[in-house]
Image (cartoon, rainbow, N blue to C red):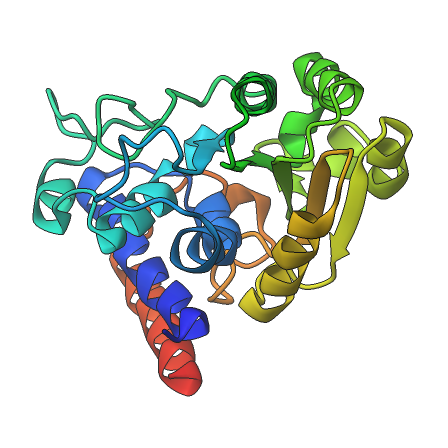
Length: 274
């Protein structure tokens, strides 16, 4: 499967979803797409067929506001109907609400209250160790989310318990709702910060490149005695100059003109990679 092209197909699905629901965190949806694509179509032992197995891999979308990308990936994987997703997303009474809903198949945890995903994954990973299970646990966090203190409590516990079955990813797009991360709450060196908490740290130079992500996730599987974090350097709004690196696209619905240009850009990139 050509994951590079698939990521751009799924971006188009996601933009359509945002338009249909008249709401969505479109910028972060675009930056995180290759991470989710690589996880669900290459790395994780999870599918509609084994989603109730105690030996499945576990995933938590900690940056739950990027739910449109997450729903698009899960629908492509076959966890639920694309038609139902696109016809009911963000409508009154819909199961497909604006943050991950664990009443839907394939979703382990309601998320979107930032800072909660990593601590919950620590518990999942610790349970796996206690049970002698072989599953791995993954979570994706936004870089703005790292201002939450619970992230660092979780990071400290993960190192203390030597949870080498835990892999976190930081979607490092350097923008959040109110501007640049380094102006809102500076991170200094995330590599050194996580390393000081006892984590194995992998810097992914281009977090929108599935080949680089593949190599990083494979490295993470070899690490023993400590958790791993991937710092994936991504582009907010990735895929169209209309959105790229613009903080005001954190949450936005494209106009008709913007939609036409964005979809043209995304289609062109998909075709170039196919």
